[in-house]
Image (tube, rainbow, N blue to C red; front, side, top):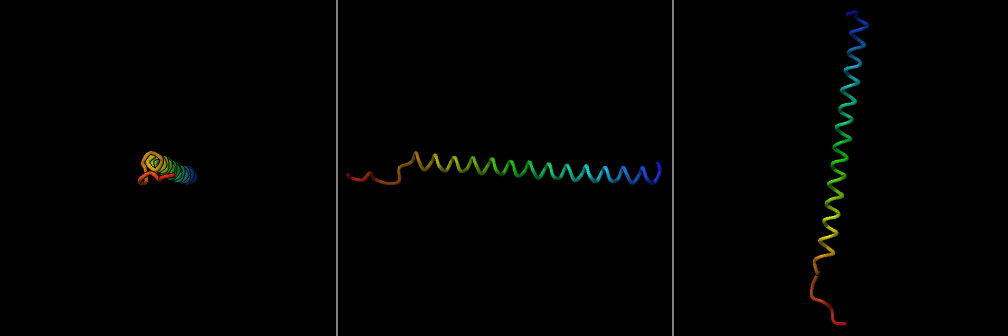
Length: 58
């Protein structure tokens, strides 16, 4: 291979690695967001379904 072809291949490999890292980061962010939403939903359902204390007399 020529030096130009080697340089082009190295640049392509670097760009591929950057794209793969960005995709992993985006997936991790999406996973974290989904987990946070799941926890928030769980917290709300626990709050709604569990009484906080004795009923008040009205």
